[in-house]
Image (cartoon, rainbow, N blue to C red; front, side):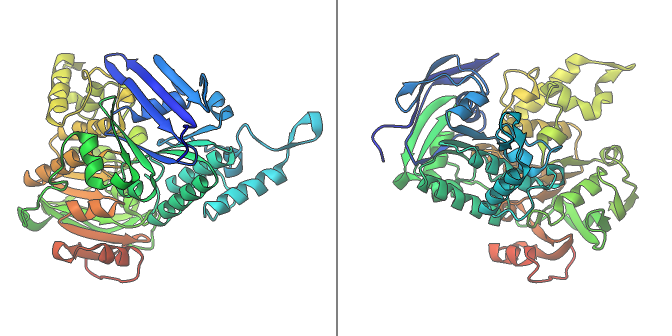
Length: 508
């Protein structure tokens, strides 16, 4: 490792109203190094990187690049310094095609002073970057036609194409399949070999173990310590991040479900994406049924159809033997069926609303008298929910946009828990959430099951779906290829069904 860092952040401080986000934080990055930046949600990782990327201004502290103090006043200035930022939340422009997104503001030109866009070079260069990422699609494809995973890879191609010297990756694999994740990790290694320094933020600690040269850990806005390559074990990372050992990451199963009868059933569901296949499954009271499969298998489409967000070609839903007519989310909510969506910012929250307003919104009539909202009752309920599931915020009056990803997810959960769910559908319940918050959500899921709530949990993380489920229904290309009972659980069994290698033939 070179003795002089390419980048040094010293004494970085940042305050938001009522919150100290960063308190005298230091970070060194060396040439051709992959340094993992770790910490729980709210630890200050994203704030620190937004300061480095020119998104927000620091209150005090210095940024030194190759021995010279610099001011990174905007993302454009950061890009000029060779600092590129791949955000966790997608920032592609879906009204443009892939090539236009990759070379936005850097389009190749021709015609001298006319500076006409050289579209032949534009698409050729974009296709070359896509091939490097293993993304098999034309750069002329409209971004609106891409999946979330493909859009993420377009963002990565845009940053690589900008010639980054320092590349910040904030949860880059959160929406990627196993094969796409593996390809990304190979690209990170390749970039490092070509002299690029990478700051890698991820809650997937197995990725950190594979590619990081060093890890810098933040806790509560302060430096908690540094781990060298030889010390990068899951146990040490978790201990430094949360300040304690997580003895039981997944809550122990009691080995039995309260009522094994098929209390909530979905029969012959045919989604608009896969109308040629029907999906049937059931969930008992107090049971957690995991819905596994690769990205694009149709799991989210099933969840959205059951909740009434998406129209289905055909579907029969019963609860306790009673046939339900779910045509809209209003129908689902009226029957105690709630969805925690994969994209919490766009679909689960109104980010400009406060915590109180988000929690009360689905059941606003419960806080109203003669059509007037009782704001004191609304705030009292929000305060109770914040305390019960440990939402970290100064008060329920904080805007959801100002919360960390993990706390935003808890607000989505809180609004449904306030309505006493009968069936709760989790679509990627811990996407982009740190290990401490994950443990809390797993405990919450198991507690809800003990209370008799039927839970459907969609997850792309193998460890998660194996750890929280009583049974696992595995999907491949719009159909359930098999059901695994707990004694049959293994990564190999799930992957065999997820790739369509075996047709289990059983119904959930």
